[in-house]
Amino acid sequence: MTLNQHEIEKRKIKLRNALSKYIFLVAIYAIPIAGFAVFWVYVNIQSILNAFRLEVQGELQWSFRNWQYFWQDLTGESTFVNMPQILRNTLIFFGTNIAIILPLSFLFSYFLFKKVCGYKFFRVIFFAPNIISAAVLATLFKFMVNPSLDGIITQLYTLITNKPSPNFLMDERYALTAVVCYCIWTGFSVNLVLFNGAMERVPKDVLEAASIDGIGNTRELFQIVLPMIWSTIGTLIITTTAGIFMASGPLLLLTQGAYGTNTISFWIYQQVQAQTSPYYPATVGFIFTLIGVPIVLAVKWLVERFFTEVQY
Image (cartoon, rainbow, N blue to C red; front, side):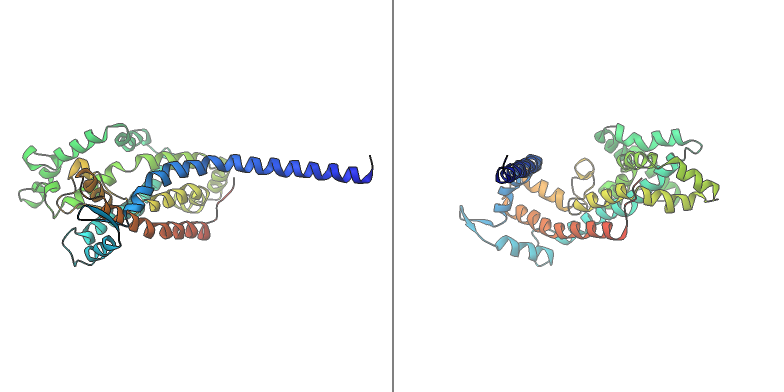
């Protein structure tokens, strides 16, 4: 084989290798791209287009009028929908998830991980809401807060305040708080599974060495366990933030969005169910999507910037 033939063969091999590499990359990326195209672009393209449409005298026109309506609702200049209230409620549910349920799930998971006395009983208590049907739980909660049925919460209210108890789900003063309490009561189970699985992966040698060095449970929790399972915590923070404007309690089962408990996602659901004009709800959904994307990206950057993932 001459020198030129040898060079030609080397180039052919490099070309085949490069071609195989590109074919492999295309095959790998084709599945997620196809999934994104089908399950996001195809599903949402009509909603995106509707955000720029307006029906005038039975005819569809391209318009930003719905965007103007949204701004009027947000600033209270219009009475079409109480947008400040439903936005506030949405952020309250999101804050409950990120600032109460997530930290408590972490603490309860450590409690179960350490297998303290009675941990099996509490494990059943914590996981029970995930086993029982949501409809059954909602019905049970309605019974507990209904004074006409002598629910236990209403009895406690009367005992403590010496006043007749209101129906907490049908009183605008208490309805939102009652739904938030229900969310906290039933919101631990999935997080507990994830946190417990992550904690079980922490090397026992590390914990034993910490115990020999005299590190207590508090330092072990925050200085050893927390950094070592941060990837799981960070993922939950990012996924929870991704649903920041979709955060909502079980309003369909408890209040139907009445008594000052409505949220953005449930209001959009109501508009769709009522078969009203789809254009304004589509505009509202699209606007909050545009707002939510940079928030999620910023949170992702913060999670990766200030906390280093530990490999073990």
